[in-house]
Every structure is written in C-alpha cells, then in structure tokens.
Amino acid sequence: MELDVVLLPPKSLSAQLGGLILNLNKQVKLNIIVDGKKLLPHISLLHIEANAKAIPQINAALHKLAFGTKSFKVVFGKKNTAPGVFKAFLQVTILKSSKLSKLHADVVNQISPYRTGTVLLPPKLPNKLQKQYQKKYGAGNILKFFAPHFTLGRLKNLDDANKALKILSRKKLSPFIGKRIAVAKVDKHHQAVKILKEFKLK
Image (cartoon, rainbow, N blue to C red; front, side, top):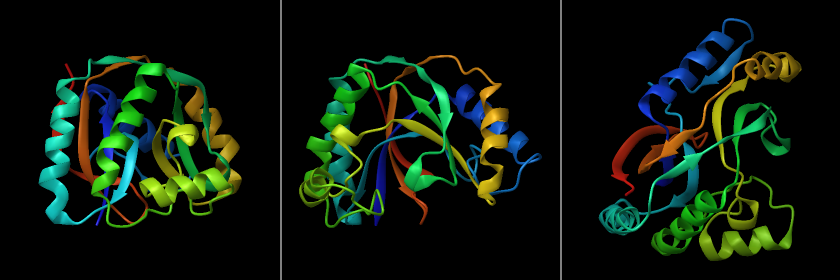
C-alpha cells in the first residue's frame, strides 16, 4: 500500500485552502478537488510503498522523530505553480527553508527503510540522481528534488491553467507554524484521503 508522511497545516488553514479550491471550481472545471474533507491538504515529506504490517514501526519512528523536532514557521512561496510533469495539478508552493528541509531529510532517512517497493514520483525520472534516489529510498522526488507545496486540485482542461492561477494568486496566504506530522493513506493520484496517525512536534 502507498502511504504518505506529511506535514499538516492548522485546521483553519486547511479549511481556507478547501474553500479556495471550491470557489475556483465554480469558475473553472476541476476533476480533483482537495476540499479538506474527502481529500486533505498537506505537504508531502515522503511517499512510501509499504506493507500494512510495517505501520506500527513507521508510527514508532515518527513518534520519536516528532519528539525530537521543534515546530517551525512555514512560509508560502511567491507564486502559485502548475509545474511541468504535473501540469494539470494546481499547487501552492512553500519556501524550502532549512528546518523544513531537515525534517524532510530526517523522514526520508528514518522511514524509507520500511519500504517494500517504489512509488513512481515523478512518473518519469529525468536524470541519474533521481533514479538513484528511487532505488535507494523508493521515490525520486526527494532530497535535492524536494519541492514542498500544497496540491489544491487538478484542472479538467489545461487551457484553463492561466485563468486558474490568476484567480489563485489574488489570495494571499499567511505563514503558519508547522507542528503536526502524520502518516496518511493516499488514493491513486497520491492525494491524502485519511490520516492514520498524527504526531505533534515540540
């Protein structure tokens, strides 16, 4: 099964992001909507293919990691992007701070040993280093290629991309304190559908 170790936003921000994409859906057509109910806003730290029997060990490792990690400020990037491989996906970028990068690296190093396979992220591995990451850690979109973001939804029609990004850019999102990490169950689009276990940072 595929799991995602994630950094969760405050519940108020989750509701705000859900409202933002639901409002956008009234103006452009979307076929995936991260509304905060059926699909949950999150920052992915590591996608992992793992056996359900390993979940207690993963939880124990994350509990220990969370206990030794201080909460930190998370800042939104200047632009909303729909990047290359995931063109149809609407995303809000997060600044890659040293504290967020360290949390990500710690999760990769401590949780990837529990993997039983690989997750095809990105779907195509454009360079040698990403192939090495996938072989060693189970995913290629990590470490040097870690690009923190919130996925808001996926456009039904790519021609609506500029209009959608223009609408999203009108809304200024305030920084928040990252203090909750979790193990999430995901769907076939790698979107979080259920929080299996949550852990609070110090």
